[in-house]
Length: 204
Image (tube, rainbow, N blue to C red; front, side, top):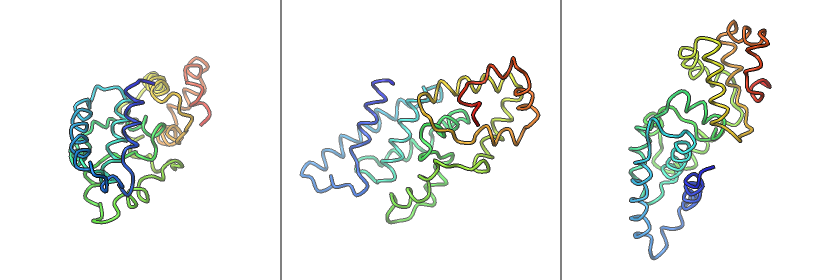
């Protein structure tokens, strides 16, 4: 795990749901400093960036936005333009299931005027036990992009590296296999191909 990833997690603990820091004598200064931090971190966002770092940034920014932490108004702009490839979203399902979103603008348009954090928790932070049908749009995209057994295996090997050491197992492959049973049966029936499937995915 990178030092940068650890520092992001530490920074993320600054704000709280009720934001008690508003009562501090230096609250204004803290908010101004955080405005600068938002831009520094935001400038690291790239479609070619490391998924683990992008995951930490998006989780931090979503938490700050939902908690309405002072000095973080600009995170909404970064979240609106965040690069969410299907591979990245798949990674998030395994490492940060409580913060998986595909379209921030849709979420922003639904937000209530009061109790944003409570609303966010109730609406989006209960994804640890996803059902296969919840993943249908994502697997349809992945299925269109990875059409051969070799492409699927390459994707799974890359995903395994990105999500280590998470032990969560959302039903991504179960849903995908239901959508395209022939290709997954061909992998399962071939000893050569089955050996290339990472062990953690064989358990689904």
